[in-house]
Length: 92
Image (cartoon, rainbow, N blue to C red; front, side, top):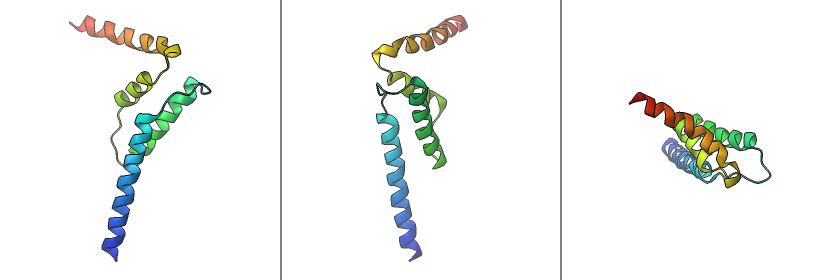
C-alpha cells in the first residue's frame, strides 16, 4: 500500500512539475495586463517551481520576461540590454 501511495505521489509530482514548466514557458503578455502584473505572474510561477525543488534562476526569469514582451514594449528590452552590453565591452 505504501509503495502505491509513493508511486501515485511521484506521478502527480512529475505532472505538476511539467505543468508548471509549461505555464512558465507559455506565459504571455496580455493587452489588458500591466507590465507589473505580467512580471508578477512570471515570478509567481517561478516561485511555485522553486517550492517543488526546481531550479529557476534570475537569468531564466529575466530572459522569459524580455522575450515575452510585445513589440510595443521592446524599448524595455533595449533599455535592459544597453547597460549590460556596455559593461561587457568595458571588461575587455
